[in-house]
Image 1 (cartoon, rainbow, N blue to C red):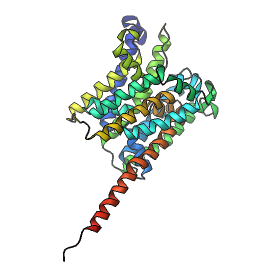
Image 2 (image 1 turned 45 degrees about the vertical axis):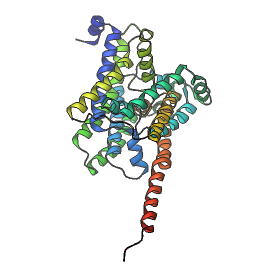
Image 3 (image 1 turned 135 degrees about the vertical axis):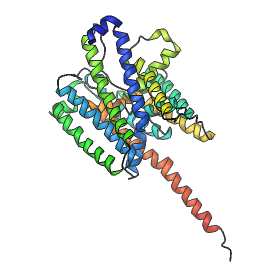
Length: 368
């Protein structure tokens, strides 16, 4: 049965929601098994301990870039109408939002997609962070924080089209994108071999990248056959989290679309993967300061993600795979913000703790 027959039989909204669900399940399973996480990759990078986490992220990142641009080169996909390229963007929003998101994901010990994965595995810290993230994102979209977001967004903007498309701006085209992606793929494969990344990590990382590329292809294909406008899009978690919150609170206010199926699909995929691997585990907070840290991180990620126009996946993988200028700026901001926060909150604190222990040991008298 082709896509036209599916649309005629089940309707556009049902088909696109089902595709979102399928993409979510694929992402949930592969991200859970591979431990895909930008926060972990950033920490390994800045600490100079390039290991499995960075290897997995690079493999997923490059797989998304190469596959998406291959679809474009084959004529199967046209991403020029995607919001990351066609609409006016904000360079100030991407930079500031990326920095804030990077700070937040260190404080919550996971980006928005990772905390959804962990919440589905029984992590109550991630569940609280995710709720705070969604509420703050909604407030930044159309609530009390919207005026601040709009002001920051308007400081430095860029027109849509070629000005926001890096491949068009540098006259590279999809072949250039494939070559660029392959260069990172080589680095990822080298690190995978060097650190003996297990098969589940390799397959999972590639699966994450394919989930992004296939989502682009699926939404474009349905949109081309649909009578109603269906946007060409891929995986993202900031806007969909805010929308899902409002769908739960006011279920009649939003029609079904790709994002409606995405978040439940990720949760289902992650839960099933953890269940089969016997990794479901109920975890909570150990103290009050820890809870404050997670709440602050969720708020920063929610506002930063909405300001930047996407999260670590929405900008860092999906947006990057179509070479959106603002997505790459946001991704850079996330790496910088996360690196500085890790140094200030975790590495510095660990160094001070080790120093305190050493001083205490020196102060202990030695028995004759």
